[in-house]
Image (cartoon, rainbow, N blue to C red; front, side):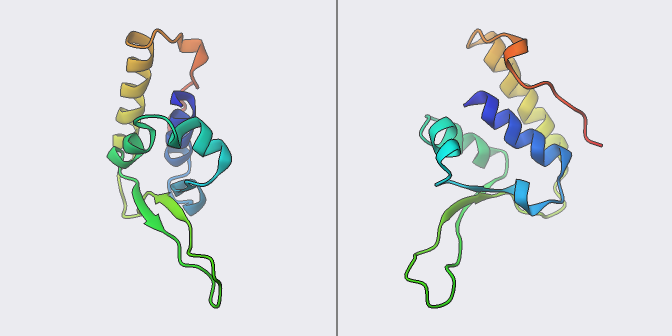
Length: 110
């Protein structure tokens, strides 16, 4: 869960203007297994600024739409995400006993 959360934040930090990295389908099997079904995973992303929304289904579709997490593109400073990532990494190492080499390396924004 922690590795995936770091990767989600890293993607937004590296490409803040790309809507694709700012939207997460909650039904995505990999995301569901690694994050959504884990206690606190979705809540952590919401605390980072993501908002839970439902997509609009195509016209004449019987599908109800899809639950997603979206980080609004409102000119948010990515420094909040950088701090959230550092805190997550620190807790993973100090409180959960993970090793730093098990976690994704941080790359500063371009």
